Image (cartoon, rainbow, N blue to C red; front, top):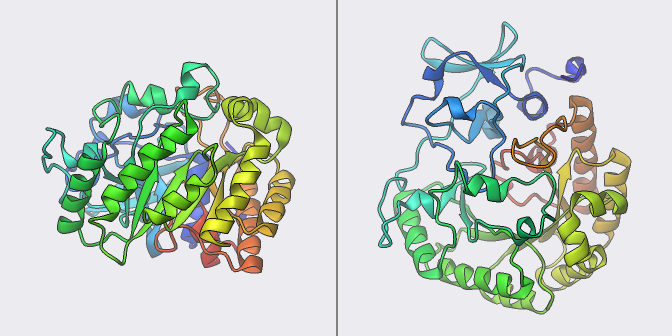
Length: 385
C-alpha cells in the first residue's frame, strides 16, 4: 500500500478515483452486492478482483459524485471501504466517511432475449460508464495461443471462467439486433465502443470488425459516436474502410512507449507486428480520421513518467492523443504479482496528460463520463490541476 495519501483532496472525486485505482476497495458485507437494480459485471474482457469468487454478482463500476466513474477492484486489505449508511452507499477511508457513491442502474435491455438464444447483455454491455454501449467482437486473443500475450492481460482466462457465458464471436446480424434493442429501450447512450482480441491475421481480424461496425451503424441514432480500440492492420488503407463504415475515432493499443519494456511486456505485438509499424499506423490514422480523433492507448503504471512524457510529446507531434488505462494486477495475468501504481505516480500522470490535452486542444474519447479505469476525462476536466 502506498503512503502518499496526504497528496489527496478528499473532496475531489478525481483524486478519490486515483486512490481507488491505486489501492482498490474492500467491503464488509456481501449484502452490498445482493441488489438486482444495479448493472452487474459481465466480464467480457478481464477481471481484477481477488475476492470475486465470494459473490454472485459484482458491479463493474462505482459512480462517484460529479459523474466520475471508477473501476471496482476488490482488495480485502484496502483502507478504502464500501458500506451502507441510512440506505445510502458510502465510501470510507478507514473509519472516516468520504463521500456518497452509487452504481450504474441495470439497463432495461439486459435480460432481453435475442434470436440466437442469448440475452442481450451477453452480446453487448454498458462498459465504463452509463453512456457507452460496448461490443467485444472477438473474446479471444491469438497471442495467448503462442504464449506471447501482453503480460497484463487476462482476456482468454476470463472468457474461460467468469466471462464464459458471453458470446465468443459476435456476428454482424446479432450485433445489429442487440444494438437495435439497446437503442430502443435505453436512452442514455452517447457512444458505441468496439473492441476485439487480436486475430492471427490482422487484416482479417479488422475485416470482421468492419462488418460488425457496418451492421451496428445501420441502426445507430445520429447523435451516437462510434469508437474502436483495435490492433492495426497490415494493409493500412483498411482504415479508410473503417471510416466509410461509420467510425468516428480510433485507438491503437501500443500500451508501453519505452522500447525495451514494450518488447518484454507486449511480446506478441513486438515480434508479430512490430513497434515501428504501430507508428506508421498512427500516422495513417491521423490522415484518415484527423488530428485528435486518433489515440494511442497506454497502460499507466508500466513505465516511468519520463518515458510516458516522451511518448506523449512524440505522439502529439503527429496528431495522436494519449489515452490511458491504469494498470490493475489481474489474478490470471502474467503480471498478477505486480503492485498497482501509487497515488503519487497517478497524480503526476494525470497532470501530465492534462497538460498535453490543453497544449494540443485534444479531447478525450468519452468526454461525458469517461471510463472506469482511465483518467482521460478527469484530466481533461481539470480535476488534477
